[in-house]
Image (cartoon, rainbow, N blue to C red; front, side, top):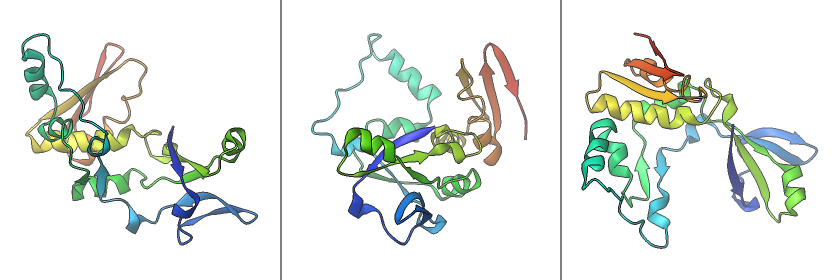
Length: 189
């Protein structure tokens, strides 16, 4: 449920809403009008490029990826573009599913580490799906739709994707299909 985020004290702005214990802020809520409009791509800041994908089948597996992964996420897998503009339609859907989510201060963790910085955890459990998976699922479904997909599917053993996958297609008017423990669940909009 948590994404680890470590923030240096001076990076935390005073203008953001939040809750306090005494003088110390323990929760930060990003205003909706400040939701990020770009995704950050860590590949741009790696000290050296990643090696190219290994395909023991002379390119057959890489060609298969082109058939099952939307073109834009596949392109971004090897892009060194530092910031990628989030499509407006995806941003609108992020707001519909409960983004932005709050940062919660991890005081006991700071004490345990004797940390010289404040540590905040990103509370993704506040989204409708209860996890961060909706963030990538929305984008992947959006790009699948742009590529002409008629439905999307995923597999899940323990159910982690059973809820995040149906939401984006329904938000974007696309038919979801989820396979969970051998059962296929389909819902049309």
